[in-house]
Amino acid sequence: MTDAVKPAVAAAPESGFGSLRALTPWVAAAAVFLVLPYAFTSGAALTMLSLMGIMIVFTLSYNMLLGQTGMLSFGHAVYYGLGAFFTVHVMNFVIRNGLPVPVPVIPIVGGLFGLVFGILFGWVSTKRGGTAFAMISLGLAELVASSANILRGFFGGEEGITTNRTKLLGVFGYNFGPQIQVYFLIAAWCVLCMILMYAITRTPLGRMCNAVRENAERAQFVGYDPRMVRFLAFCLASFFAGVAGSLAAINFEIVNATYVGVGQSGVVLLAAYVGGIGFFFGPIIGAVIVTYLQVMLSDVTEIWQLYFGLMFIVIVMFAPNGVAGLIMMHRPLWRAGVVGRVVPAYLVALGPALLFTAAAILLIEMIHHAAAKVGEGPKMTFLRVPLDLSSPVSWLGAVGLLAVGFILSRLVWPMIARAWGDAMGTARERGFVA
Image (cartoon, rainbow, N blue to C red; front, side):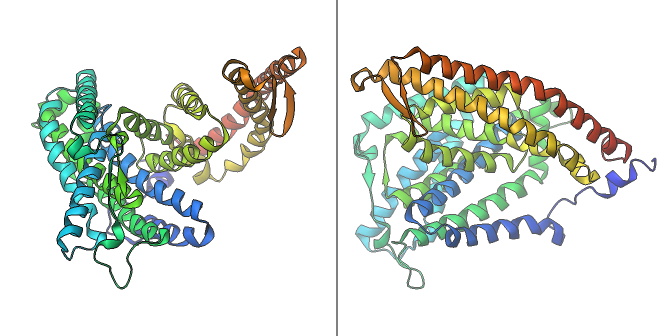
């Protein structure tokens, strides 16, 4: 081993939970969950934080399929939704019979029913991998979604099924009526599920999931059944998806057919890809970003789903490893102490990037207003700037800003490339890049 490689090996992080260093991320995560509700105290902020916690569990469970085992599923919301429906029915049963069941243990119900249906559907769908598995998952999703409109006694039809979490047994005087109490319940389950799902990735099963993802034939050659590995991963992912659905049922106190719809499966797929399926913390980042944009964009524009689609396309085309991949690209530079060399170039490129993005959004909003809001007239506002769509000046201005942003972005790109190459060269000389 050469001296140039030794620093990189010595700096390699320890794995497992046997050291204080390994426990640090989980302590930090718990501290963040504990501090956030006191930093953002409004009711809307607490609701958003609760949704983020639910989405983190849901997205991490999906990543057990896609990121860890290489199974692209279009129906993961089935186990999320069924876990939520069974949770509501069990809560109502407990309330009617006066059983001493506290709210904090209710998510186990959703997890168990998610696991049951994961076993039933997974036994069929995991017989095949790749595209066949994806199509089977889509068919099962449509089957359950159509059943939600037929079996109204269980799914409640369009109105859904409601419950009341405050009528369950309280814990230490807490009835989980206020949103902050529900938030801490979700946060506790979120941290617990994150730890459990990470621990699974460090087990032999987790390693074999990665092996099946990379080369199923080679995994079978060394004595493992790829189908059984996929089945076990599917069952575990369904369990945690059911926990997420149960937390959603407790939070909203109502469950309807949208919980099992393909749209919900699309959202979790988007969150996983945006965050980065190749890294454990990637889906966490994606869940936070997607939840925030879902809540905020829906209040700003009517076509917020279009921006979700565009974001997904941009991520897949230019950052296939997601936000986490972009972060991890800079890890060798950080360890070598040269990340500061690329920061000035990034700051210079930020202006043209923001200009191009703002101009693109402006043009999209203008087209939407002209096509879908004819009755409101040609006048609109964008960032408090009045515009008249009947005037060619407005259109030429938007196209001009878009062109200027694009040209400036192309001009500063060589500077970023030079700064990146210089920093990577130094990191390689210091032994932090293979």
